[in-house]
Length: 523
Image 1 (cartoon, rainbow, N blue to C red):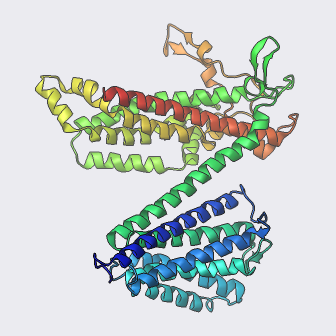
Image 2 (image 1 turned 30 degrees about the vertical axis):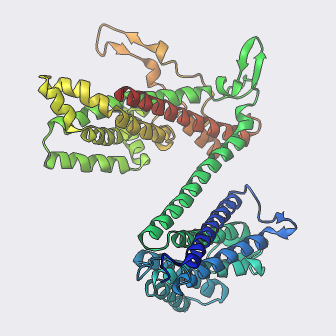
Image 3 (image 1 turned 120 degrees about the vertical axis):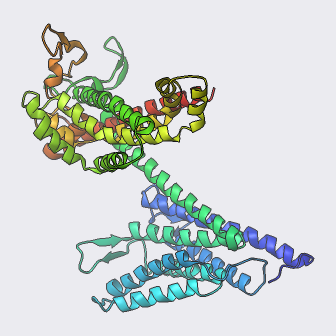
């Protein structure tokens, strides 16, 4: 290879080559972002770009990246540039390109050529075998660039020639489904951008270990971009759909009040001028608060015993397996348990306390798992230093170990609350009352405590009443509708947005708590 340090021409060509590879990787990232925006309907593939159809523009750019990547590999193989490729691109890359070409060959053979099973398997296997051989057998520079560039050139040519246009559709034989261009085109462009961006990044790194690291970073960045974009897109979609319902009747300095927000402060009663979801909000808050009060002390206490007192052995292994299994148990199973075991013991009717205990049982395994891991992660030096000062074991746990583990414990509680706050099945079976929830008053839990001279000495009738909750109200709206409410779809999206905001509020409180204790720990 041309690696002579005194050759100025080679050194200059290498610098330009690296810049070209970086530009190709950047173009692939931009194509990935545009295709992702099209998939999320932020932009439309039917919109022209400077008078040129967007599909053709995307096809031309994808083809350009594919040809550039192939050229990079050939330039490296013929020693026009200084690189350090390994003998093979690796089994992981070979398997990945085998899967891409196998799926592509099978779809073309079965859906375009009309071959039936098992005839379409022959070209699919052939395409996969060629891709595997073309990746694993040549040197790394060719094995990394040729299959990736071929994918991009094939996709780009299909888009550029109009074979797959903006009005293209593909009825799938044997399936009751049809693929349309507004989904297929962005998906193909994203796939091509991933492989060409990876190959161009490897080229920029000069192949070898450094090139593989750079290529992996590009893949990770693009995948993280896609995840964040989907998350942000989901939130924005719910916000746009739910904002009209959420802010219906909203006003400032109206009717003698500073803020009037009837959707959040009214019920769904017949006399309400604007139907609201206040009882459902209060019910959700009480369910989450009760579940946290049940699960957190119990889970943290059990974690302290397992991490600080119990010896590692069969007992701790059984507990670990059991808690992992419970956390993986479907929520409907917890709901059935609450309906069959808890409801008969609380007046044989749905109630807030039954829902609180059911959700508490769901939250308990995660609190136990994360709290135990957080306690085990505390360095033993903390315990040894405390013991050297003559502090008892319990005082060490209480004053040293637990404060150091609180950020991890809080993380577990945050994750658990985010799950149980949006659960529908347990609430449906243990708490929700009536087909159309939300028409009654909010549960007055704080003002319903009663003292007595006989056990249980403290009672609260409000906890034994059925209540609505945001997930259950949304479920009822979807399945049964809500008579007497104008724009029921708008109302339902308002409930969905409120539920999202409530869950995010719990997350915000938990994150703020975690950062507070972490800052106190580092002082």
